[in-house]
Length: 246
Ligand SMILES: [Zn+2]
Image 1 (cartoon, protein in one colour):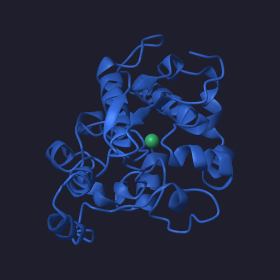
Image 2: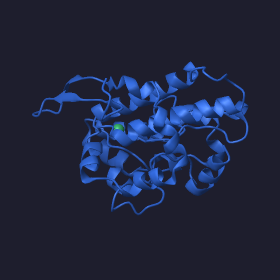
Image 3: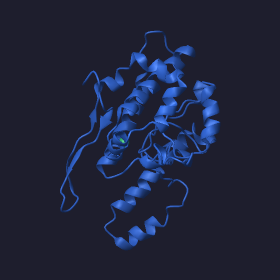
């Protein structure tokens, strides 16, 4: 660990340049990502940080992200999400002051980040459009989450999925397994059959296959409002209003 970590988690690999075969891969977590950060209150209440998140992204950070490195903003965001659930549960009387974030939440967050890093290892880029594949009224539907994902790709940077009114209505905080986009794109990339690959590629417009990556989401080229980091659901504005009620 480090007092100034530059990543939250990474999935580096060694690939045979002749064949593309993955020879070795690891998933690394920065320990302090899970320990909380006393300064993140500012991230929750300060609109400036949300604006910076989208518009003031350096080329260096974009280049790192496109290689799958979790940058400092991801690390800060995960801390903010841990703080958010902590405050939310405190405010609802579900935990006492000084209690840790529930294990169930930490387990789901770790599982999602691990799937995300394995996705990078297998060659996937970020998918920041995948949140729009889930209608708002399906966000808390566990069956939907298991089959298609709370967001359709583990390669998303999601927000934590909390029901605005009723804790008992909560579904999964993060994706419990791979999403519909992940299954589709892996079936394309890993089929040895060229004809089959063409057929799979033609399913790009089907529901559950939405895709938009780093350059579409952040920095100067980010013009499509559906490609966002840290949002959820098919209607980001309506979701934002709900989130403001938390
Ligand atoms: Zn990533």
